[in-house]
Amino acid sequence: MGVVYRILLGSVACVGLTLFGCGGVQYVDNADSREYSSMGIDYHDLEAAASDNIQSLLESGYVKGLAGLDKPKVLAISDVVNDTMQHFSTEELTRKITRDMRNSGKFILTMAFSGSGGSKDKMISDVRKARDNEEVNQYGVPEKGTIIAPELSLSGKIIQRNTKVKSKQRVDYFFLLTLTDLKSGLVVWDNEVNIIKLGSKKSAW
Image (cartoon, rainbow, N blue to C red; front, side):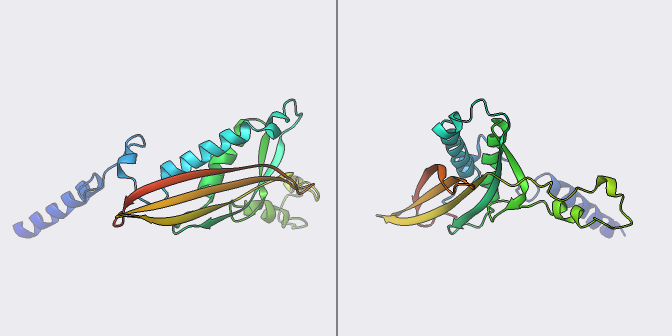
């Protein structure tokens, strides 16, 4: 009985310690996490790509021309193609960018329209299916013609290129973004951010 008790007690202690790092897991502060960078796309790369792109956009002639606009431009996230070896949602990048776009006061994001670079809010469509449903109070159901169509579309592509440099491996990432006027089809802004990494051929991805 004493042996069983000690085993159970040890198991509980191990579970408790595992929650606080018994298995070697630890929290890494964002400021220190560059020390654990890999050859793949990580948090810092997405932050840098988003920051550089939004800076380019907000300083562009197009955005400066929106000064004094009565209401913000309605923006939809279109397709953003992940043409790399890394598996991640491109929405991690686009939502960082559109968040700063909205904070500028010149843009507002719609969740009724979206490509692969974003996501729709399915409730927008579901709540409209409640029309003429006798179980639903029709007072709160949106009328037809109330969804606002986007005026601008944000699209892009992320490309990876690997190159051997003597005994090392170089990886170039290209973050390409384009803002298009949906009425005219004209590009009102585009930008490219490059991130280059150099490491051993055995570097972890």
